[in-house]
Amino acid sequence: MLERPGPRVVVFLERAILARERAQRARDAETHEFHERMEASWLRMAASAAFIERVERFLRARDEAVPATDRCPECARLMMLRTIETRDEAHVYSFRCTFCGASETRVARL
Image (cartoon, rainbow, N blue to C red; front, side, top):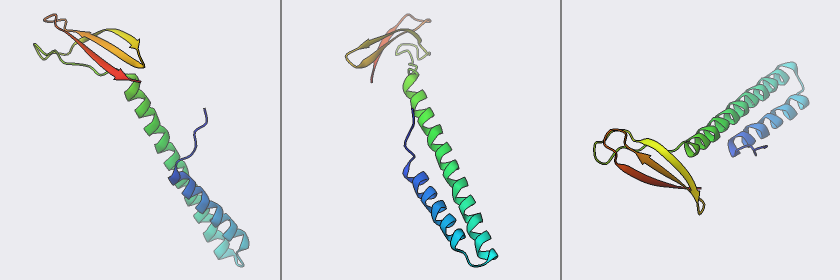
């Protein structure tokens, strides 16, 4: 699926376009080279911003996909995930403590 670039990426790309147009209109080689370097810099910044956006989307998706672990209310040890059920636009996670046998349920909205 194609994602729309974020506002930072769009601004950087627009500035790269302006730098390209200025390079094409430059009257001397020094000004032309300056604007070409500026275009390259804006394009690198756009690529970096796009990469950061992809990483942020990945981390958000990962955090939403992995169920939270839970601590046992009785002994405070990590509980084991037993089942995941989908009900009414929510995931219901059931945990059970392997040490003391206590159970806990969590609901995560979709």
